[in-house]
Length: 184
Image (cartoon, rainbow, N blue to C red; front, side):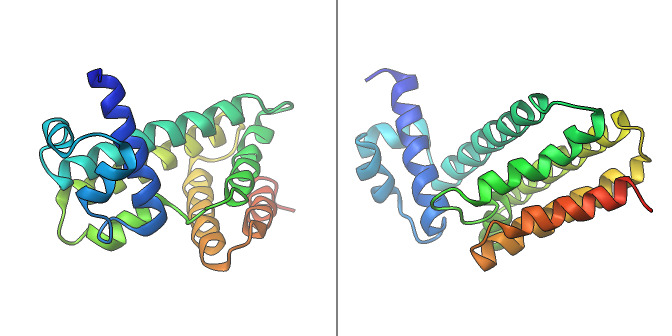
């Protein structure tokens, strides 16, 4: 099996298992079984579970942010609509089958105190998301500080949607974002 194919199969399996069941409850043998890759090959590509977790988070970060940006870039209308499109995208994500909240918050909650790599991956993801929203807000002509406020609003919606099992927090956060962008 080709190196990249094996790597992708392992990461796909790890993402499904880690996101769905939690990192600590999933062993390397479960990843091996789900990926169809031998345990030897798994350890050749990822010498430790920590290395696999870090690779999973880095890949998830890239895909998550790429998906968000593609959706926002497709939003029609004035620049403030691109900001509000972030919350529309969140609503679609919250409604996906198997939505369990933010993989980075979940991972940080499980391992952030004991794994500097997980803590750093979570911080980097959250920082990149905040910067992205700040850029959208500045392009819309709103103060940069509003970007940080909207990022907090989005983060709260993510956690609330995960806990409640409802996509409704996205629409509620979108309305609050609109009020922050256009105070009366």
